[in-house]
Every structure is written in structure tokens, then in C-alpha cells.
Image (cartoon, rainbow, N blue to C red; front, side, top):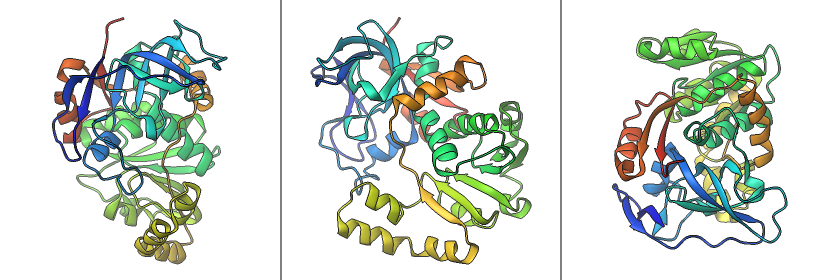
Length: 334
């Protein structure tokens, strides 16, 4: 099969080459990929920025989420059949959706929403699951809560705003002036132009915040969340709770505990809880998201669709940070 691979970390350009089709295990299905989406985690993986948590063997096929057609099922697969249209996010140790086929566990996929194209469906899994797990599992958002979502016009932001609104939250977000109308249409109640206004100067007493930027912006987020509130971060440092639950060796847990000193200090000073999120694949949660999609309460936002032969241009564009919504690669026609 054709696949886009890297031979070593920090290899800027992906190489289109031919590799063996992956073999499936008893509870796996083999999916012919029609479309895959690009995500910032692909860039971090390529550049070796996740090696502390995940150190992959080379050569490596990048890519985490996909939509396609089931071509083969393992001997213990019970809920998926050959010919089914499915979508999903593979486990972090089984990435490789920038290819014509992927082997994935049956529990990590769900039926493709009937009202979406394969390209639209491929835009959902990572951002949908990340948003749902942040807002529902960790923040436990309820109707009337005030939630701040960073970077509302990005891949995560466009999905998180919609899901938060379906939970009944009041949503504030940051974006540029040119994208203000987009995030307002998605449901944002307060839109802050980050070019002209610091969000920590105008927001106060929020129940929760979803940090997708990290760095100094994460530090500022502690100023706007009220005591007893929660901050969930994607690019921030893993915390001790995550390190233990993820099964990291003790020395890595110690390293992260020491590195998180400034965050723990902010937690004590503000009485705001910090949690790091490393999203988990879940076919069951994708089925929940399916209900929102098929009821037309949540819509995937796509910036552009690029043919597989031009995947490097898609990677380069994602790296500019200017994408409104998701960048999709069409692997095969359907």
C-alpha cells in the first residue's frame, strides 16, 4: 500500500512510499482509508516532541484519525462487518492513517454518520473526542456554566464550542477579527480578538477553561477561572495524576512533578485545579457524538481537502497555524 512516512524524527518532509498492508489481530478490523485528517499532534510526533511519552520505531507512518470502508475483520470481531463505513481514532501506539489501509481495534471505531461525507467524518474523531473528554469527563460541564475555550477557530476550538453549547454552557473564546463571525455562528457568546485584547483582562469568574495554546497563555488562564474551577490543557505539561494513570516509570513521574512546580504553585494560589489531557480513542463516545452530528447540532469545520499525492502541502499549511477548522487528506476516491 502507499503510505506517507518519516525515517527519523525532525524529518520535515514526509516520503510517499510503498509498505506492507498491516496485519489484523483477533479484535481488529482492516479499513481501507478514504480520508484522513491532519492534527497538530502529527507535527509534534514528527518533531520528536512527544518522545518522553511515546517513542516510536522508525520508519513511521503518521496520522491518527480516519474514515473509510471495512475490508476485513478479525476472528473475534462482533459489531463490525465487511463493507461498513466507519470512522475513528487509532490508539497512540498504532498510528498510521496517512496510508491506504489501517488496522484498528473494533472498540476504537464507530459507524460513519450517515449525513457526512468521508472527508467530513475524518475531521471528527480526534477533535470530537478531545473536546468531549475535556468538557464532559474532566470539566463535567453543566447547563449555565461559563467556559473559556482558547483559539475558537482552530480544529479543536470549532468542535469544542459546539459541544459546550449543546451542554448549555456560556462560551467565551479567542480568535482573530476575520474569524469572529465564524465562531459566533458556531455558538460563542463572547469573542475576544487576541490581536487587540488580552483575554485575562476582560474575563473573570469562569467555571472552567480549555487551554489549547500552553505557555504564557496557560499561566494567564489561571486569572480568569474562579476558585474551585478547572483548567484542562492539551499542550501543557502532563501532571502527576496523568503520569501515574498512564503508567509512566517512577523516574518520569518525578521529572514531571519537578517540571510542574510553577503550575502547582498557581493551583495553590488560585485554588483552581489543573489537568493535562491526552485523549483516548473511544468508539462508544464517537457514537454519542454521532447523535449530535446526525441531529445537525454539531458540524465539522473543514478548511481544505488535499489529495494524498500532495500531503506535504497539507502538512506545510497546517504548520502555518492559519487553518480554519480541519485540513483533510483524501486517500482514495469513493
